[in-house]
Length: 370
Image 1 (cartoon, rainbow, N blue to C red):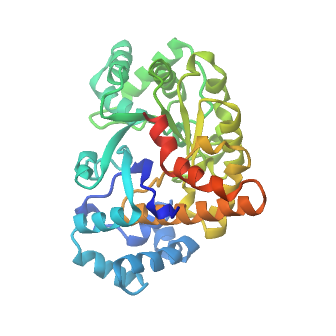
Image 2: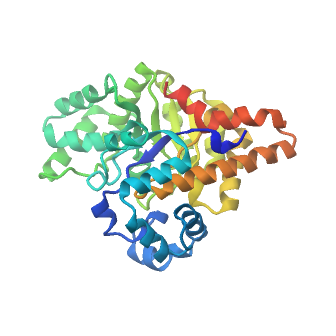
Image 3: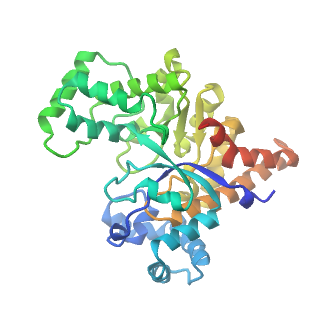
């Protein structure tokens, strides 16, 4: 089987920037996790990922492999035409979008239905930040939060938490009075703009509510793990820190999805997927952001222990449509290399490869998200 013929289910991605917003930022900003202008302008163009990507994008757009030539080609295309070209080349069947990243600057998720089947990922912290402006009493706030997700809205395919960016993955139970105190302290500080919730007792309390509801409905909940933007404290993003919720029986029916291959904690993520029935893992962002050898190494590490029935494709793409194309291109290429290396190493036989590729690129997500 040619892996290009497998239609992808991209189970975690982000919305593309509105045209007016995209015009105000550097093209190179889409190829780095940094938000520092010095990194973006002076260093991001010197990564292996960026240099490789220029060649890939130039082939897609049929232009010279330079940033200047690519920008010129992009400007000649309408955004819709560029998206259609990237999605068609990527052969994407469905995308599940988390629109909590740069929410005021991106195209609403329903707009993508013109090009591909779309479902919504509900970012829990973003929901809480909006509700805290509407409810000044703690009990009313908690009731509103629970009512918003129980039952999960029909257009929502999964919940998601970015607690690794905020207070860490070591989610714990907290005394309700402590959580109330945190809530009212935040209420004293907020004006009319949504706050960025960074209070551990409150975030942990909300996530435990969400986990109870997810378990009740057997509804997936995604966790950002490992690397990401600089807001992540990498010491708090190790998925092994999820032990409390993984060992708590009342949460055991809630499927837990570890995003980003938990890089650089990839082996840890693979281990968790191998011993906890509710844990799944993807390799989004590790592909295509790493070097070719890094991508190959990371996926190989996942497969050291993780069952192939627990590994899923995602792009974790954001900002520009080219990242959907690059993630799809290199995920197929790296998966092909890694699986055939497994045949060479006698872990697999060649007759098993097609079914495994189909599972990782499409079927595992289809089964998990029903």
